[in-house]
Amino acid sequence: MTLNEAEVAGHAPTQLPADHVSRVIAEWHEERPDLPVDPVEIVSRACRLAAHFMTGIHNVLAGSGVSAADFAVLATLRRAGHPYRLSQRQLMTELGLTSGTISVRIDQLTRRGLVRRDPDPSDGRSVLVTLTEQGERLFDAIAPEHLANEARLVAALSPAEQAQLARLLHVLLIEFEPVAGGRPDEPLGFAVVPAHVGHARRAATGLPLEPGLLIDHVRPGGPAEASGLRRGDLLVGVGDRAIRSLADLAGAVAASPGDVTLRVKRGGRAVEATIPARTAKTPARAARIPRTG
Image 1 (spheres, one colour):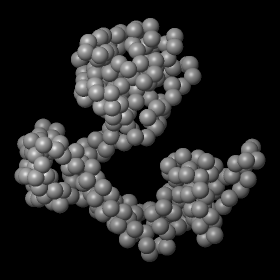
Image 2 (cartoon, helix red, strand yellow; image 1 turned 30 degrees about the vertical axis):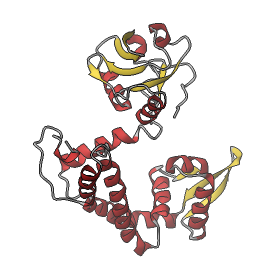
Image 3 (tube, helix red, strand yellow; image 1 turned 45 degrees about the vertical axis):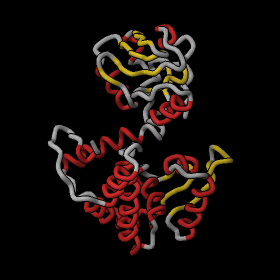
Image 4 (cartoon, one colour; image 1 turned 90 degrees about the vertical axis):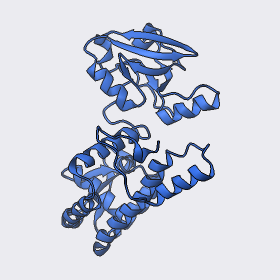
């Protein structure tokens, strides 16, 4: 069964017109039916949509003389609130850029008078970047049309479908980027690697590829260690809920009415571990567990 044929969110499957990706999938099913090509339906479509989205965004911004990359810097400073100032390192982190790339972008915006660089009085090694009045006016002039354009780009989806897609993209993205506000595994006293990293590690060692989160670190003296969890365990459930993502784990822990019962696979055995409620939902006070993968 292909992803187009699968039932989604309780709706009956709908026969869709063929797109480029569906033709590719059909050709692979014909040529190499042994290849598990269904993930191509997601990854390839996401890549192709990203290209279409960036073209649409570029077309709207082109008249202002601001590139999409420039606009991202202005938007990040504007949403920081008055005085619309962040350190260069904060900008680098927010935008996921290297120091060299963010430096070049800030140079370009500085020359146009849209941002200003100032030494950080509290740290001689740091630079503060501030949105100028000209930059603020430009952003406020562009933003309404930019947002209207983004609404047009997803207009084929109903509000409910947009919300559903946004949630699924959120679930997937937090497996690749740091989680804002703390990870759901920290209070439990262990750290898991992202699902795709755990999948790759198990494949490399010849272990079965099954849904779950691979435990990479157990904090010494923490609740997970006391409950008997070990590095290398595969977390497959919390209570009666299956776990395959950080989003699943966060939701399951939040929904647990009392003690948190973790179900893991250890080798070929199923193992349960219980973490008391008083520790499971309390932020860890020890050193933060490192993000791995």
